[in-house]
Image (tube, rainbow, N blue to C red):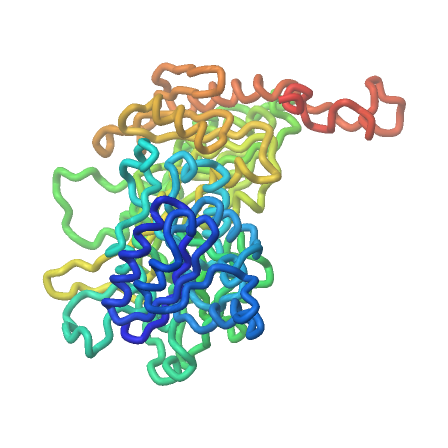
Amino acid sequence: MNNKRILLIVGGGIAAYKACELIRLLRGAGATVTCVLTEGGAKFITALTLAALSENQVHTTLWDLKNEVEMGHIRLSREADLVVVCPASADLLAKMAGGMADDLATTLLLATDKPVVAVPAMNVRMWEHPATRRNVSWLADNGVIVMEPDEGPMACGEYGPGRLPEPPAILGLIRAVLGGATAEEDDDDDLPQLPGLEAISSMAQTDEDAGANGNSSGFVAEGFGLGGLSGSLIKRKPPAEEGSEGTVADPNPPFLPDEVPIPGTAAAMPMLAGGLVLARKGAARSAPPTDPDAINHTVSSSALPPEMLAEMLGEAANDPYAAEPWPTTPGPLTGRHVLVTAGPTHEAIDPVRYLANRSSGKQGYAIAAAAARAGAKVTLVSGPVALATPRGVERIDTESARDMAAAVKDHLPADVAIMVAAVADWRTVSVAGKKMKKRGSAPPALMLTENPDILATVAGSPDRPLLLVGFAAETDDVLANATEKRRRKGADWIIANDVSGAPGKSVMGGDANVVHIVSETGVESLPEMAKHLVAEAIVARIATALGPPPAPVVDDFEPAIEPVGENSENTPGTPAEAQQS
């Protein structure tokens, strides 16, 4: 980090005192530190303290006549190699998400073209509040690197996530973003390298450095965090590198502005962007884990046999209604649009490996099938599963959490959204372009970061459904955790089930389920049933909650009911009860 220039923005909060230790560590590592102290930060620490530690002028106002004659906020934003916001309060994160520029800190953040690291610190309830989660989720799909706060006791006496990480951990993240140790500083070439560090390092290089060093990583890293979140207030476009290669990326990344150039094209430039520290998944895909042809080695005789693919068994493999006639009369959900997610997500590590979970998708597919038989128009957004599409259902196949988030957004609005999918909470910060090889005795280090929160995003969407239902797969304190999740996510119902148990004996992958429907009015527990019967019970309760289906539009003769118009009490397709709620 020798001669690296760090612009440190100190926000408001009791954690501001840790900025002093961070400055000491940064200077000890060879970096030059210039501080910007916000009005809130000045309530906890003085400019004199920061100036003494950094041995540089501390900037506190946008209206400094001497500095602003030279457009000081622009100069500050351009001269740094990295901008660090520590601590980043809930207010400062909200201003970043809103693109506000009402003081020196927010103005230079909006004006900078350099990578930005934000280190949040706030009360646990503030961190978990839907407004903060929404702001972080929006920022997540752009380009600032936001480090996840630590969990522990608060100055206010509460306990949970929201504590500012310790300065050595923050220093470690800054080192990684700036490219880590140089060859002169670290001669140990045998240590395993984290995927994506080369690409991240290139983001902070000058045109001359980029031209001289190049980028041979083979993929584009879009963000970095120590298992944390990321977001961006503006698009970052560091200098392009000639001869660098990148993987083929999704041309429609979720929740990004349309004007963002498609990565991998001549018009695009490397960019720190991404969802909660985003990383493009690899271009190649591995074989499904249940594909017998993919097993090319001897397995234990005590292991479970591979599951047959649905294509081998036909549609009857997962359709309990295969032998029953299709309903010919309108059902309780006729005229309704039901959006269902189902299955796991696969988060790529390299072209061969991925992170996933044991979800089979059976419960979600059963709910989609039951809703279709009840007369609804059903859109099923599915992760990678070995199941046939239920009759009467439109299926959208996705692979990663970000793919699923984009598909859900594209298929709103809906009357009901039932989020059954077991979306992976984490993914790797970067995806290797080639298969990662064994290197000595040390395994590769995988840096993880959070995926988009699809349920919370839908809850905060302008197209929020009349009824939003989430699922909670729990292994302990099932009802308590589900109740808290319903409040935290902003869902109307949370359907909780206990997924503890060994593989083959758990709800995940099994054919039966025991669920508890948690709503504002209480908890309804259903007995153990086959998953298609659980689905029928859930769909019946959804139909009751929505009320009668919307009346069909009648043309060419006098309607028997009061016509719907601008002055009518209800809008088409919306029960009066739903509008009043």
